[in-house]
Length: 578
Image (cartoon, rainbow, N blue to C red; front, top):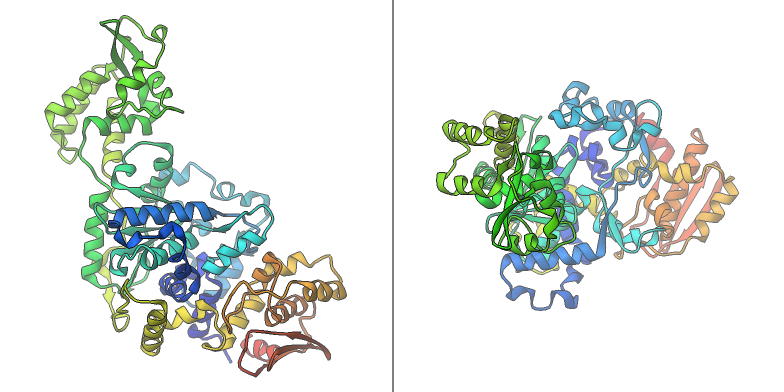
């Protein structure tokens, strides 16, 4: 028996590491579909916070959802949550799917450095990997909504948590279920270091970890917006996933509907560009603080013009509800003590008020070189770095996303259209996906991400459990076999998955300190197999129980998962794979 691509992909649908999603781009949407099947997000509809949400306009619905996610989830990128692997181990596993040179073009942990931004940071230091030797890298696993919710059982977490892919998939599912946004209007984007969604509502909305950005927010120049801009400013988009399929920067084949992708490309480009206005100029200066020292602000004090350095004026925005860039400027400047102003213009600086007048009257178009030259001439009168300033302003106003090129792709149809509509109930969604599953690859993979062993071949789940769960092995390293058995047996008999048939992986059981008997048996198998690599390991599912046997020692756990009775000759099967 060999490792088929189908087995590897289905097993990857269970663990959903960032590497696996990059190699198998269908998995991104498969997890979304798994979350759509889960009862967890559907229960949000019953929360009083969402009472009457269907009566609100789309943006208000999405804003309400955003606050709910902000209140219930935090961002987590702890390297130790799901453990570590090595570059070589991952390359060996995926050598039949991608080569190292190709991988290095798009994956930060395998050599990708993107634009100049990434040349200025050591990527291992950036991620905190410099404390490990050699080619160690993290298993950044994407969590299901159940695994995100279960973070509340970990110390230092008061509620749910997840990394960026988990949060983007959670958002996408909740946008459909709770905010009633059609899947056709939700595009999932992955870059080498980030994941987010573009929602085609109004001028567009980007989800960014727990937060949202409208077009106005994208250009407001605040620190939060600057952080949110990094991915699209500095990285190329490697995957775009949609209800019609996906497109990948590296692979030749694309399954996304070309018309849908063209609409997305047009809409996100419009979202990422704006005309130069007075407000945008001030927002730009807020964003690029190093250029503020080219400017000063004129303001009347006791009826006569006075002046203040722009960077000094901007400093007063911190902790204030007033801004230099909007109608509250007067309140901000009036709050500054009189002695902070100078009675004469500051030498070598442009008066921001006059520059704003020039912008307002000139109708500058940053796409026209002659307009940019006019800007440089005006700035050059008071700023020695006029050329740099204009280049920075142009980049601020016009971000060109590096999207997968649709022109060099071979298009294939993913399958019959999903046909999922916001007015459907959960049972209808699940029924529709069951109907599509036999002839829709992404839908079939969704059932493996859903982790229901009564609806899937169990071997992809078991392969993932016994090969890619290092945290429990590491956590038990100082325990004897007897101590491990006692510890696992004493865990609360409570699965993080509510439904029959759905199982947690060993490291989820270990991290969250609870599990059904079937999950405990698989956790124990993972730890003991690592200690006895040549041992004979078998499992049997019988009504109400799961039995684990290793070298004649048998352990039995009561299970409420109602798994289909079956036997799993683990050692023989794994040996045949090798």
